[in-house]
Structure formats: structure tokens, C-alpha cells
Length: 565
Image (cartoon, rainbow, N blue to C red; front, top):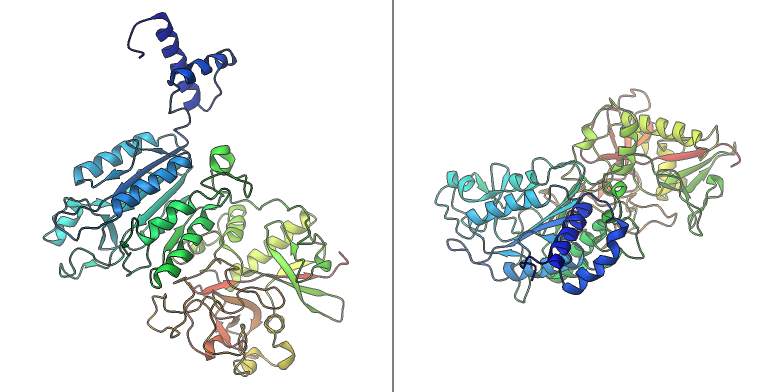
């Protein structure tokens, strides 16, 4: 229609060039051009790339394998997920889902993906098909891959590291979704180095969220219907307005587990911002609405406004109306002392995003805490790899910050709970000798657990070493959906409104374990790695040197109110 060299067509082409340039640069078209937009709309020539640079996706579905087990649903999975992503404002590389790609075609698609997403705020890669792991590196399998020996894997497949390399810009959100088996689907006799399917990547660039359709070592079901169990749920959850990405993926995991009874989707994350696929009434943090939400924030959040469900005054906090501080940590009362001091507990273990705020303001601290993408794959998971000294330093910084902001009084302070206070929080404080050492009280109250008196734990009791765990020792018949840590608050709180006093991570306390030697500090509450009855008792104490870090160790903060506020 615009091929003819007429004055009208020349004007339309000039307008299109101006509008496209303005759109790519993030500017509005000149005001004098706006009336002409109606003409372009009527002619059907409005450039489709006006907002294309904001969200770009490459969607691949490989099912027609020539030398491996063919799969029924990946092509339909890719098309349906692509349709949902289009409704969420994503521009698709190639204009649609790419299906049954050869090695050459997959490499070409990645090159196009890199170019198309050069200025994007959000990039997304979806792959349904076979995946392999060799030597700790993950590979996605084209339909024409013929792999007679291990050394051919790198040459005839596509490295997941290569995929992530096309998305490695630090100032954007990167989403990788893999509907692949995490066992070896093509040939279990290829040798010892070709091991169980996709594993956690060796490195995850900041701002990346990965969603696997299955836990390590599991088979991702292809499904008997139009879609795989995973993609069938994903395509629907993507279209729920206002739902933040972590909630989308959590909903997918829950529904897939419930529908299959065995397959457990698994998430890794190093993204600390907010993102919704579709804007809606539940959120106003959609990344396409502004640059500020795009970059992960590591600064303390502003103090929230008062609401009916919380109080701005620490001393007035109750189990129903916790006090919320500047980091969004919520506190409920546990114990009053005779001198008028009141002790409040954080209802959650200290989260990754809480510690990230501290780290951003304190350069030079030990960064081992940040090496936890596999076991704490999200900002709302508890921070791990922190020792007693780290936890004390965080508490001191938080005290200084909150006093300066007027959130707490000049004599109020954040610190670790004492062993006695922790016992009151879990409900056994009045049954123990207050002046006895933790060593003397260790494990003495049998048959009482943070969730009650039943053993083994009842469904939803907490995050322990259940059937989904990679540990060799597990609680028979118990499942909690998380092989490592779970987001804080994922299970029911106790009567005080406190979460995860059993499981998730061990929590450092103020006290020395021994009454004399003073070599080891107390940890309470069990962890995702615990499976023994004794280790999950409310009265059980773990103990370690204060400089020791481990992947099951975290902490919870107490707030001591000494002033009248």
C-alpha cells in the first residue's frame, strides 16, 4: 500500500520514522504529529514496534526429536505461552513461538534475540523440550541433535550459559523458564559425566529469575492433553492482573504439584525488585511503567503508611497488629520484663532483601551471604551463610538506622533474641528453668514441637527435610514443596503470629551454649535439613562457634522497647 511514490505515502513514511525513533528513545512523539496518528491507525500502518523495546521474549518448543525420545506437547506449550506473553506486552522474536528448531535454527534465534533485546527492560526466554547436564553445565537439545558420545554434547546442543549470556545486561530483569526434564532423557548409558538433566546454573547474573518445571532429578511430565502440566498452568497464571512474578511462579508450583502428585517446579532468583506480567489493581510496579522499578533496589524501603492491620507504635504492637519498621519487617510482642522493657520478635526470619539493604550500606562486609542462589532463590527467602557476628552487625546497623529515622526510641534496640526469649516465643518458656544454661535445657522437653505434639509433623507444619529434599535422610511421607529454603511466611504461624519457629533455617541467639567454656553460640528452631524427632523439638538447641557460616544458618531479629513509644 505504501510502495507507490505519492505525496501521502511519503508523508506517512516520514511520520512512521519519526514516531518509531521517538518510541525507541523513550520519548513521546511531537505534539504536532498526534492528529496524524489517527490517519495511520485507519490505514493500519501504525508501527507495531512502538513499545517493542520494553519487553522481548524468545519462545522455543522442541518436540519432533529425530534421534531421541519425541515429545508430544512442547510445540503447543510454546505457542500457548507465547500467546499469553503477547497479551502481557512482549514482542516475540520471529513474531511467534519458534518450534522444532535445528541446532542452526536455535543459534540463529539466539542471535536475533540478542539484537531484538538490546534496549529492552525485560527479556524472557522460554524453552520446552529436552535438556541435558554435562560437567555441571546445562544444555538445551535441538531436534536434530545426534549425540553418540559425550564430547559431542557441546557441539550439537545449545548451552544455557550461552542463552543467559544474551540476557546478561545488569540493568534489566531477565526471566528464564524451562519446561524440561531434570533427569537424563536421551541416553542414560552415555557415561558417568552425562548426569541427571538440568541443574542450577553455576552462576546467575543479578536480576535473573529462573523457573524450572521440575526439581533436580525429576521427570517433567509431557502430559496427555494439549499441554504439559507445567505449561498448561503457566499460560493461565501469566494473565492474572497485578500478580507479582514470585506469586505467579509459586502458584504454578503449587498447582503442578497438586495435579501430578510428584512434579515440583523449582525457582532460582537474584532479582530484588517488583514485576507483574500484567498490570492490575494489586500492584503498580509493572516494569514497563518506569525505569525505577526495573533495577533491583538494595536500599531500605520507606516507612509504610499506617493501616488497620499494623501499628506504627512498637509498644502498642499486638499479634493482630504488628509493628512494621522501615525495611517492612513486622514485630509482635513476646515477653515483658519487670523493668518495663518489652521484647518483640520479627514474625519472619531475616530475609535476603533485608540483608541486601544492610550490605548496600556497608561495603566491605563478608559477601558469603550472596552466594546462595540455589538454596535461597528469592528476596523473601531467609538469608543464609551468615554467622553470629554478621547477625549482630546487622542488628546494630538496623538500630542506628531506625533511631535516626524516628522509627524507634533513642533507647530502643534491635538485637538477637536470648535463648529464654526464644523459648517463650515458641511456647515453652514457662516450662524451663530461667537461670539454667542452654546446654542444661537442650532437648529436655520431649514430644513438643513448634507445630504441636504430633510426630511426624502434620501437613503444612513447616519446611523440613521432606520427600522433596535432596538429603538422604528424610521425614517419611512428609512434603513441603521446597527442597531447600522456603519464602518466609509460607506456612501457618503460631498463636503469637510468628512464622517458621520450626524449620527453614536455624536462628542464632545471643547466648553461649555452655555455662563456662563459652566457645559456641546457641541456634534454635531446626532447618530445611532436619528430619529427626529430637532435632525438631521446641527445646532442641544447636550450637556452633560464632564465626561459623552454613547453608542452614540464618537469624531472626528481636526489638527491645525501653522507651514509652
